Length: 162
Length: 206
Image 1 (cartoon, rainbow over the protein chains, first blue to last red):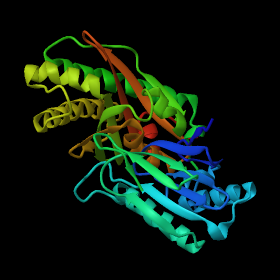
Image 2 (image 1 turned 135 degrees about the vertical axis):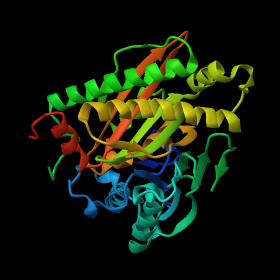
Image 3 (image 1 turned 120 degrees about the vertical axis):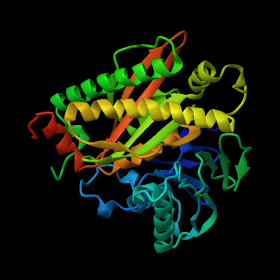
Image 4 (image 1 turned 120 degrees about the horizontal axis):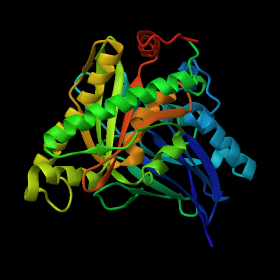
């Protein structure tokens, strides 16, 4: 029996096929799904903020940030036997949930999260195969490392697979 | 105040927030009852300091569809505020105002704007009582409204709290006329505003 492992906000989990990983109600946060297609080891990180180095109050939770969260996910996958050179990623989330005219930069945190995730993945040479990011609505995502399918659901929309 | 983290806030501060929440929510309910022209009762609000993971569960799961009203706060203090209510409860409130004009499925344009007005009144009354208690000028920006999954809506205040620590502080207020309605208030002052609120209430900053 395969299992779908739940990833919370500011959290990350790995899994091995046929298991999958899911995170519910991504808003401005970004879900990063990574897979090694050979070993079919996968993982999902649900990051909240772009950069751990700009936060004064050093957080204990490294899964909260794009930079440290992705590093940790890759590390945990390697520990299971995945090879970084084979890893590929799909990303979703980073929505702007509320719109304001000329409001402060916190409002665009969704976009900044997506940018930070792309930058980090590029830096460690993990290609992004597909993405469903931005816009103004929340997403529930489920990732299956067996096939690499990333299922995305949103309120009032039919499920899509990237 | 540089290393303020919500985990370290004192009991006193939580008591103060509870009191602000209590009075704020009370004022908000009075305003709502005037708008709906009926009696609205309220339970004592609960102040909760939760892990990011726990917030969704409190509201019936991260995928629970809710109406979220979000606005900025300007003036002597800055930050943002959110009011959340489950979509069924929102429909109930709308029915009180609009009667049979409320549609079964989804939210029409006019329902959205009525809900925005309800949000405006509730958050306005809440911030007004905070302003009166602290004697600080607090100006709300026009609210923005969305209908989406609880987790997605909550990611917005959670991210702001995330720059301070790993917890989110919210005020759960249950109110009811014929049916029970769970409403949630989340006030997110910017880090510079915490000492201002505490000082204005005569609480020494540890």
